[in-house]
Image 1: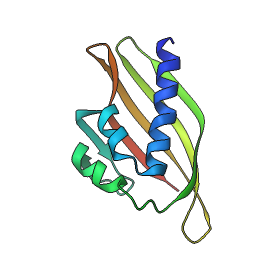
Image 2 (image 1 turned 90 degrees about the vertical axis):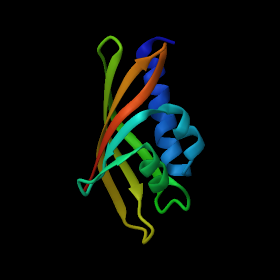
Image 3 (image 1 turned 180 degrees about the vertical axis):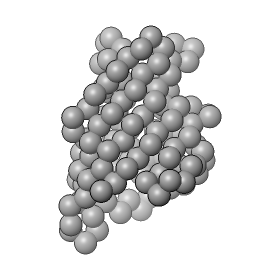
Length: 117
């Protein structure tokens, strides 16, 4: 796979891991210095993020749309839109930006920002 295909696959795994609350897989694809900006503006490190996404998962049918992967050498940015179902059955949506870096030949997510409507 080329870099774009690898990052597209990692993006799908990232979204699947959010839906499943798969902290083990996230532990593998997030860098140790990972930082996430939450929709409320708070900033959490890797441990804080893993705690946030741990089961029980409160949303269903999480999907990403309009995925835009921009590769810039050993650095990449992924922008996308999300849709999901809230616990009360209402539809939700948002956007995210993930920053990836190639470290020792492996792509790792080093930062993310999430927005919800």
